Length: 171
Image 1 (spheres, one colour):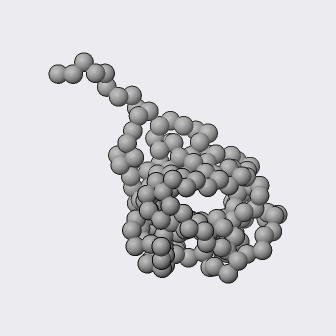
Image 2: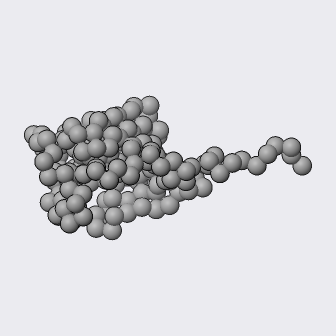
Image 3: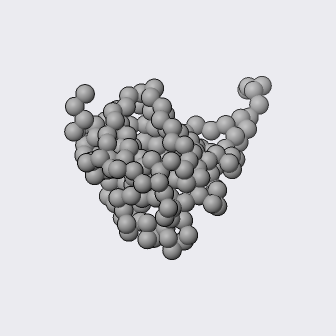
């Protein structure tokens, strides 16, 4: 018998919370995620531990008007897609996206191993709008809910289409 008190509800392990995610429309938007912030009772921060399998990506390339976002690479070798250009990442790398810049981004798993990332951002801002520069259908859907960022700063996009292809990362 232990004299140690029970752990409070705001201490959790990511594996306890892990569940599959998919947007249902794009077959390469899939993985396993743990909504840590919500599970720990946080309402101003969204914190997600995500495991993204080879050939998948974290999201459609997007930029947010009001919510900052931070991503930390825990395991694996993802590529971050920033305005049409891929940048290779390794464990320990951190990427920050200030709100309102219009910098579109997504994390792609072009490797042959799962990647593990920690995504932290502001949450539940009613005024936040999202721009999807490569996805007019998603913009139209968001516009019906007054969530589309229609006047986002314009950026010249590089040649990459924002889609992951397993096994194409060479390092």
